[in-house]
Image 1: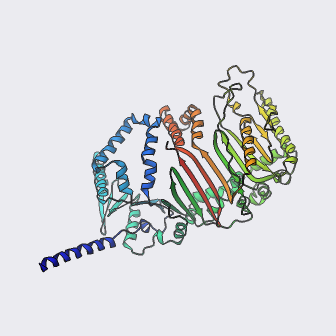
Image 2: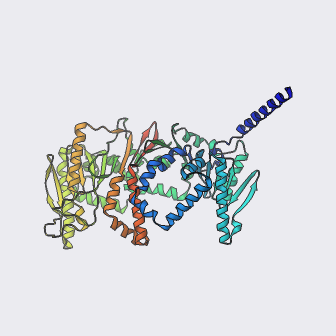
Image 3: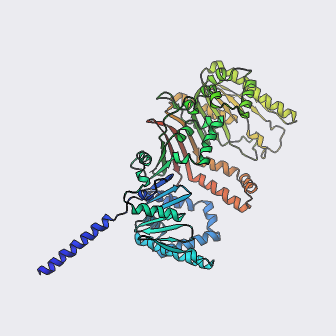
Length: 586
């Protein structure tokens, strides 16, 4: 009896020891196997959360209900895909969603390294399923290679205690326990395996800039990304792209505070969060210094309570953009910012000199504008009495805030009418119809509207493209509206009236804010579908069927997104951006 009891104790102790050894061999975080010279890394720690949002019941129902999906189902290529998917489900013994969750549930790590090396590490929850999937893919790869007479391209090699495989003679991959590793080059896989063999190897996880970026992510982030900006800026094409922004005045003004902060930073950190049907991205860079002669010096709010004004809401809004830009100070420093005067800048100055009767553009014109600048793009609603163009362009407008509107309104009015007069003079020389000026009133605000008359046109259902434009000027309260149509100008007067009644406050320390409405974007694309299809056929040489499929895909994607909003500003001395993408899963 005692001998049997001792045997049981020995067996129990053995199991305990084996479990302890197994626990001791738990794989370290995948990021510790990524080389230190990685330029970009992405860590998806909770794949199931993203899978549930993008491939769950709601998303699947929304996608399968799309007309585009119904069209694709009947095509032979799609049927082949479904057949392959069904085969994989049978072989793995479960549906594709469950299989994908088990195969990726431990996390996904992706990295881009020098010499065009790309690494992907996937941690599965089910080791047996991972091995089973590899066997299936190996069988398919061998079959395809034999058909092409290239059976040698599917091969394996031993590296220490790991078997490395290649299915095409180029990529290299291996399975270590529940971890799948693949690289687009054998050298990439070798670097990962060498780090695995070194307990304290020089991995990305040990890099100080990576650690600083990682601290910016909040605990509830389902994914984080890191970019070594110093290494990125050493790539000639990337450096040239950022340097070009300084050479173009309009680009420098538009992206002020963004280009400089990225270019002068060591790292970029990105976190992904999920709230219901909304994806939220938060990005940070560590660049803090801004030179007084930099465009960013005229884009960053100077006081704690300064920043952009909220985006304006108008009917059928497609997009809204709000910027905090000091036009007066920016233009005053143009000679320091742009010592080589461009032809575009010279043309702009000459035209402004004509429109504003030789007034000093810096001190007598731009000095009248405040830093809050807003833009709106909206789908038009056409009046049948006026007519509908065959090509339906969206309306757009710029809204400026003035310092002394009571003294500046007639100056702007004169400049506006001169611009319309110049257009009419040019068109008159070409024997083309000109614009007619009208002065309607909306909410006690007088508008100046220029339009092309349709009174002599019988068929008003297919008007020329120029009838999309009805240039309009309005100055309600302390604002200046420059709009492509009087309809949008009137909507903006209503929106500004509501804002003044409610006392809209600036968004502190935010210098750039943009919002895009997916439904309205899809609507304007749908209204011009035939034009877009024709343009795709001409530019890309696609067949009509290919062009229609491509445009319909873009329209479907636009409808799938309810809205996208991006805000960029300063927080705790760091430049931070917040991108919110709300998905339409109804």
